[in-house]
Image 1 (tube, rainbow, N blue to C red):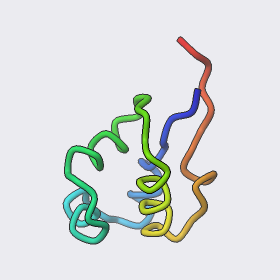
Image 2 (tube, rainbow, N blue to C red):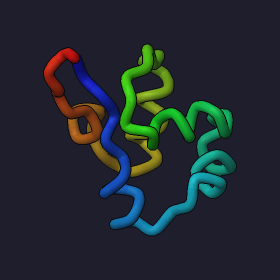
Image 3 (cartoon, one colour):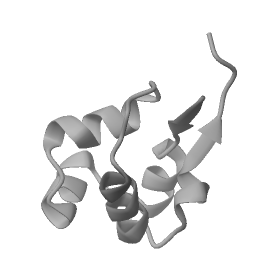
Amino acid sequence: MYIVNLYNIRWRKKYTQDEIVKATGLSKSTVNQLFSGRHYNYELYTLETIAKFFDCKISDILIEVKDE
């Protein structure tokens, strides 16, 4: 299973979740889920949008974890 790991990227770039919501057009709920570290079924569009915002590849924000 893969989860989105944005915590270190966000702090390295110093963006708040509200700034990300405004800049990307993603909902506040979606951005909150992205930073939760839990598994959700994200659309490819969501992952592309957030990777583009942080100027990175989708593979840079995904980490593989063992299924619980």
